[in-house]
Length: 122
Image (cartoon, rainbow, N blue to C red):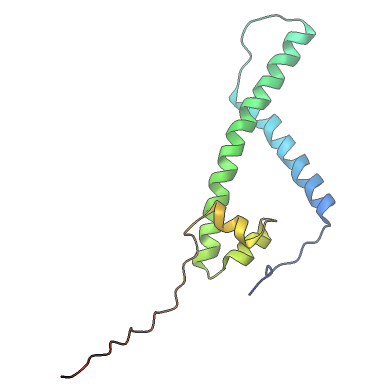
């Protein structure tokens, strides 16, 4: 069972542009909301450096959050019956790539057939 049970309304380039724009807006909002500038050079270069470093700080935190959320979504997909092929498709990676990133996420729920023991009578 491969493939994802959804279809994209956008092509990959449009999707990437939309996600990048949304992430950029979020980073700017979070940087303005979470961080305050420290006293320092009030020249144009100093202000630009402080803003860029604040965005970089937010992006590093956002990256950690995305990894955490992605793992949770992969767990939820597996719990709902998705296999590594579907999880890989949803994350634009191969089945093997998904298995390497999240080992043990999908387990084979097929019951093992009982082992047959042959005994000899003397």
